[in-house]
Length: 386
Image 1 (cartoon, helix red, strand yellow):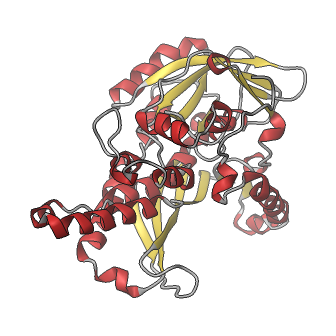
Image 2: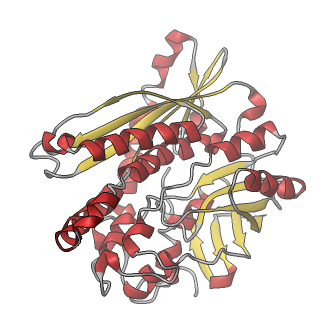
């Protein structure tokens, strides 16, 4: 497929989510935010200016770097709510199923934490404290004791996986803004980089290796599209996929927390030149860093049944899928070739699968992601987030 060409089929923007519409506002905010940086001077601090537009914002202090991230779950909780509704219907015919009732809120809680901390580690910052922000449309939701307990337990477990503490939170009730019976889950985190050698400095070099770390599925990006496809399936969310699980169960697979991987790589002497959390914008995110490079992907992971189902029933072509979904690659590390085997070994030690997927090549001008097995090229103009 030549540059920029797409086949006819379902597009992510058809769900009401358009990055082309959102990204100009993000750039607008970055410009306005820069005018406030002088306020750090009274503390003896200074912003790391190049981190504006990165996944995490860094502040240089006399004792190291402070890191700050704000992120949200998106619409994954709507999938959990749909599965709960289906369970309630099935229990009318099969009351014994009530003993196996799941809220899935523990799983979406992990996804909420993962969205925050996986952004933070892209520049080497380790999360210290995570805060939860859960807004609801009606206080009735808090009467579901199991759902509340699952969400609390899931958030705490995710913080353990991220090697940080759960610090605080906020639970506003917003009738008229959020629909009754649902919630909006998001949060923020404070992090640190304690020594200069643990800062990932956006130091990409010609010839660097691209390591793709596999995802557990769709994670929390692309859920608007995933939910839309779910309504088109023969048995909706209860449609059984190739691996024997239902579409709804697979859609709600918890997002992997990659903190241990990056932490252990830095502690183990891996020279990480850049890291990418593959969320919104899909594999286009691989060219997030400044600089003129081609990100040449030579090997890709086999997409899980959830992605094959989304593509089939959209239909969603490869260009749209890889440009918006993680397609089983949840995180990327750019390292020198000498560190490839070490990086993959550390991933395996942490229960993660990683693959040497390609190479970074210097370009004279511009940037692009070339996925050779799919003959897809994303030009730099398709990712304008800074």
